[in-house]
Amino acid sequence: MRYPNIDDFDYSELDLFADEYKAFLTPLKQQKEDEDFVTHHKTSEWKSILKKDLPDELSSIVMMVDSLVIATRLREIQIFRGFYRVSAEDKDNFVPPDIVGSSNSWLPAIEFFGEGLFFSIREEVLSEWEHLEGVGKRADEIKNRYNKSDVYIFQEFELSPRFILLHTLAHLIIRELESTAGYPAASLSERIYCSKDQKMAGVLIYTTVADIAGSLGGIIKSAEPRSFLSILEGTMKKAQWCSLDPVCSELEGQGPGWLNRAACHACSLVPEPSCDFGNVFLDRVLIKGSSILGIPSFSDFVLEVASNRKGK
Image 1 (spheres, rainbow, N blue to C red):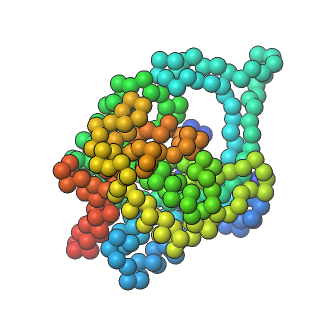
Image 2: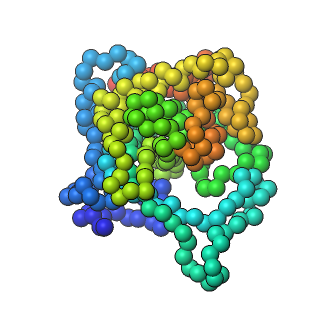
Image 3: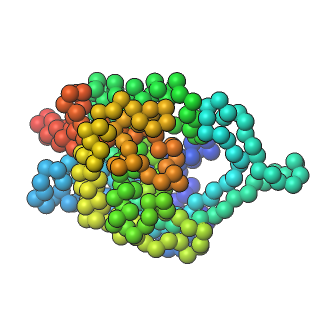
């Protein structure tokens, strides 16, 4: 189904993430509720919350989010290309689906329908934050370990401070939504839109089912600005402390290839179907901060950037 203003987009076939990111940020006109992709932009309502007398911890949350979009309907097509072993050594041993006749030009696929919430982080905040020495050093440690590990991720991505921050936020939000939206965490999925060059910094949390009627609407309700503020408040608070702290926060590495830092089953890991990256590249310290490592709390940094810009 084509949208009235779809021809205004300059789509590329090779950069699906950038195209999806652009689609979420662009209001679509004359939408019908039974179309495959229906969005409602809540950014104006979200930013209007700042006009109220909020404490600093809530003001920083509102200021860090640049856009908020509810996808009341979306479609996901999963195509089965084959199997890999989860190891860099075996990544070339690709086992294709057993389709009768080697000349077949089709692959088995299944169509899902559902809902989701999308938000993006302010680029000016991220661009300053990821240049902090402590932040860069912490992320580089994980990047260097990944380059030396036998862990293989079956998609292209940019392992950077902003990616680790967005990925950790996505996991914490999934865990928060589990108790507020009425969905088990295993039914929720993440999609990380991250690129420093293309100035992408967004997260989509969604659920889909193999039913054209879609899902139950729990995420839609939770993505309304007031509800989402409560979810993000809980997310930021839970990033501060894990029941296994101080061990979790102080370990040199956790998980496969030691590719997690402050992230374990008690705080940040989610069921395997929910994560596109094998439950690695997670670190709460980049959110909660560490004075010893020279990493500020992300919430405090947002307020600092806002204060500096007001003073200019």
